[in-house]
Image (tube, rainbow, N blue to C red; front, side, top):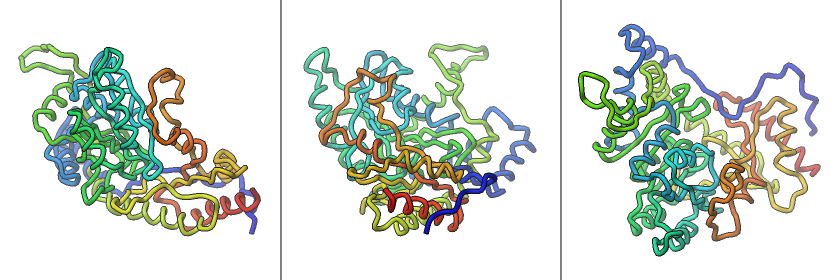
Length: 388
């Protein structure tokens, strides 16, 4: 059955938007009542404690963004001017940009088809190439691996490779809070972990992020850098470069209220994924991966069209846009970005990241989406693919 022409005043169906519950306001009011608006305060302290307990790490540092957390993780790993850092290629630019903030250089590691995340085989090949045997083959200072769209990477294999080469793994869990890998929460699976609470994430603080670590000394250093690196003196004394990176007490209050609903958000995201999977059965496409040893948080439900189709993801995106439904291409790989032209790219399976980008699309995954709205998305896709 074909779709009717969309009404012009149709409400927007978002990819993934904030969902508030009311509990957030209680913690915000506490900040106002105590006059701890900024900087810091009880909400920040408790939000750090609550997130650390949920993920299962000793230390958490609340910051203004996931990007800020990545920046401090890169600094903690010791990466500086001229140093190499191996980075996931299929990701958002915020994953890799902090390496440039410190004057380092990224080597991009291709994805694998099984998880869409960093390929352990490509990572091993990168270590073989950059083995420190010549000035143009320096050893990396760190590896940054992402759990894309909420599906965990193969962290046992990635950590084993990093440990063998004595290089710390930074886990970018910006998209995967509440996902588990072999029973362990993402965010605790590397030397350093980072979270994002941007407005489109599974829970939000409006804008914000968090650095996670197993090491109290690293957490202290990160807090020091994040509060302008102010030395312990009665005047403003600075022996290191610092940043204004700490989260405000008001935003932390939003996060505390959101954290109460994290598991409900995850369950709703999982249901959206399963309904898409069932509703799109039999079409020339597959959903983003859900490996047996993981519990993804299904932050975004994505499809990958079969390679021989004449219909493109852009055709689908534009048709959904006609109905005021937001869909987006998969992340454009970093080695294809104009800013990173000329950076090395290590692949073992023939540029998987580029293939995923060319054939993939993120579907509306908002937890406020009704079943009827989701059925409409499914109907539009089925109708186009039947004609294409």
